[in-house]
Structures are given as structure tokens and as C-alpha cells.
Figure 1 (cartoon, rainbow, N blue to C red):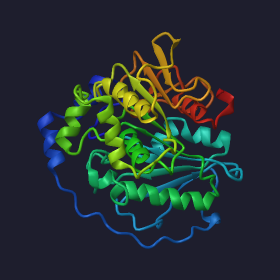
Figure 2 (tube, rainbow, N blue to C red):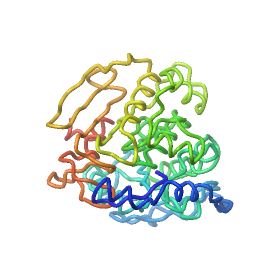
Figure 3 (tube, rainbow, N blue to C red):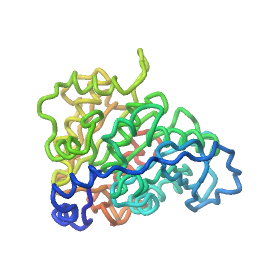
Length: 349
């Protein structure tokens, strides 16, 4: 998020951040102004070869100064296929994370294109999305607006069904995914946050570090919901995006209580009871709770007892991912379960 950790263990990952003072000093570093890019232009379909990740250099004004990468599946997407936006974590690259976490394999199997925004060290020296900075998470500006412009360009290029746009992220990317759902709720049908943070939980670097290590114990459920409403346009009776939440209980970078807070925030946003509708032990050490209708819950929360800070995979499962930086073996392929929650992976239904 605003950190760096080694992939092998929670302790090793945490040690690579350095001391808190060093991290606070790096947060105080002021990045240079984010460059404006050329006006949007149409991307010829032939310029995005199948089965490869391709950079799209011009997609809008790009006020957040991000790179736009896309993955076209090996077989052409079906007309009206969904689009999945995948946001990497700190110290990660978009291509490596999407590959390791199983998203490329899922895209090939389901013939779904991927949008892979990538952070720059000019914006954040650890290549974290600036999920806590209001200028980067609010509508119409910063990194959030860059991602929105990418979604518009990718949707136009791939002929995506605009009712089936989804966003997922790990760590800082997970927190940014939640921020995008809050800022642009009409754009996305659903999202997923892995080891991330609730919307509106911090507005500065020091506050972000505090909340990462200690979830807010004082804010009420109504206050959590109000934080989302403050970021979003008036919704009336329109439904909010559905959300899948994942958290390792041995996470030493993000306090696991933040996942509980996020579930309270998003279930409250949907007007649901605080208590989950279902609470099941899927496997030893793996718990899944849901809020809303059993057949199509609005919110789900997965907690994994032995997992540290990272994206859960199951290497032995087909398309289940492979271990990599902050991509951890958990005996559970999160990408496939998230896609099933969104209703786009019938094989997991």
C-alpha cells in the first residue's frame, strides 16, 4: 500500500519497509507534478495482439500519470464480454502480478480482456497507488480519473458490456479499487479488495500508516457509510457495486480488522444487517461470510487463518496462480472465486 515487504513471510516483508520514521519521511517526499498526456485517440484493433500484454500510450489526459496496459486473451473476446481491471500492490508490476495471481489464465479460459493500470515511481517511490490521497481518489482528478479514462478506452476497444465492468486489487491496489467503487459506483458492477482498506479511512500518509496498523475503533457503521457517500455522486435507489473482501489473519502489514471494517462499511452501504446472512467454514482455517441474498450476496468476506500479506492462490488448481512477490499459496484460488462471486465464471458456480 505505502510499504514494501518480501514475499516469503510477513516478517520478511515488514522488515523491508525499514523503520516507521523512514516510511514517514518517504511519505513527506513531494512527487513532481503529474504530466498531462496527449488527447485520446482510437487504438486500432490490430495493434493489440492476442495473448500478450500491450501498452496503450494515449488514452486521455491521464492526470494521474499512470501507464495503461491491456491483455487481450488468446482467443478473441466474445461480443459483450466483461472487462476486469486489475490493480497491483506496492513494489509490484502490473504484468507480473496479473500473471502470478491467476488473472491471465482466467482471462484466457473465459475469453475476457484485462485492463492493467500501472503505477510509476514518479508518483510513489514504492509504486503504490495513492489510495489515501484525496486528490488521487476523488472523481474527476488524479489517479482515479486516469483509471476511469483507461476503462472508457478499453471498453470502447474491446466492445465490453458496460454492465459487466469489475475491478480488483491487492494491498494499495485493493484500497484503490474500493476508492474507485466509491467514486464511480455507476461504472462498476462489482469489485474485490485483497488485504486492502475501507474507503475514506485516511487522507494523509501518516494517517494511512496508522490505520493500516490499527483499524479505526471509533467510527460507527453509519460514519463508514457516510465516508463512501461523501466520495460518490447521489445514487438515489440505484444499487451499489457488489464487493468481495479477502484477508489473511497473519497479515502484519494491514491489520486484519480492516477487512471487518470494510465488510461493515459495504454491507451498511447496501442497507443490510450488521450480522452476516451466512457464516461457513469452507475448509480448515478458511472462513466465508456473506451479506445479502444467499444466491447472490452483495458482500462476501473471506478470512484465511495462516495467510500473511498477499494474494491467495492454489498452484495445484488449474489456473490457480503461482507463487510470486506478495502472491501466496493458500490452498484457495482467489481469482477464480472472485470471478464466480461476480457471476462470470460458471465453472466455479
